[in-house]
Length: 230
Image (tube, rainbow, N blue to C red; front, side, top):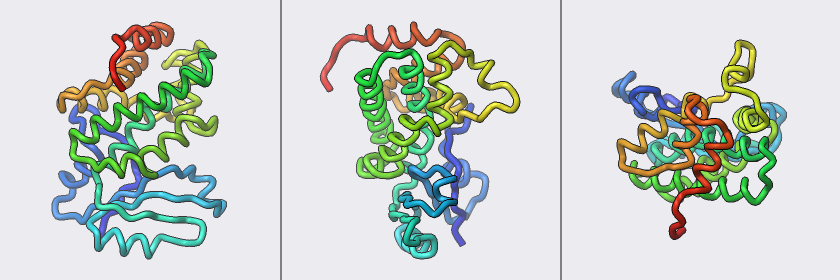
């Protein structure tokens, strides 16, 4: 019987993906992970939703058949690393896009940040053995676009409030909506450094969320980086 992970994140301290945590916590388990652009309220209303279900090929096919319906469309994959990484990292970039929106820096800046953030994700994914097509798919680019552009996204809204002048402490008070990217940012950066991958946007967000830099300085640091090839 497979254990299907529906959580998204990276463990603080160890930098492990949720699939790696499962393998360690439940030896011998048959792992699977479900992720993609899927606000729960839309799923509950029966609105069209497409996600990725990753597991060994035969298991993924069985889960796809069991979970699929006219409005809920699971696409099968065997790339657990890519699905887990995309679902975690997109929350960090969603906060970054929200900061740009909250500071009123314009749609050009937000589009550039989204594209360059996805490039960072691709570099780390390649280093960790993820498949490029996974990161280009629903659980990578698809989830990133939804989370980093929708006012319904907790992480995007959190970033907007930061960009407008709120503090992390204000926004993290008891009773406030959880923005998963706050805890994920430093863990993502740590995992990238261990893999020898440079991720300047994620690093800037980790410093901003950790109180090292205010939003304006974090953006200025990114804009002051040496120009290079795409």
